[in-house]
Length: 219
Picture (cartoon, rainbow, N blue to C red):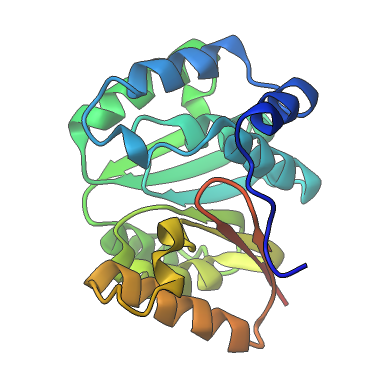
């Protein structure tokens, strides 16, 4: 089979009925975010559930997120961490992350999250400078695409062997497979996708969830 089946209509309803377990608080956040500008940056509920499951599967205690927006993915990651776990969040928007803080507080996970407003590369470099090389269990990258490669390299240094680096939007609405699409973001994603396939530092999988999510397990 050369392509995934198109998931729409009754199949969407079937998937939701049989697989989706979205807590009411997360649903409220998703619905609130849908009314905001740039709402399309939010991950899907199915993707959040998958991220949480992966974090639980590897027993994650410490994680980093590059691109927080209104906090849906961070809620999912933080929920998988133990009470003394830690999630470092990187974002440039104090406005969108105000929404995230409100939901973190309501979910009771605010104490596990440290948010830094500023360029994510600087925050990741700071984490490395604090001696956190190979000390994290999971990284989730979902921010500006032209810096994806730089985010990946830093996150790969931060996660331990057996840790995961998850990368969102790797299919980019199908643009990565269309030679006519030559914008900067698309080219950056194509280059990273090709690099990851050849990267012997990781084991690799692509999940057909959301806009495509790469899962890289550090060897």
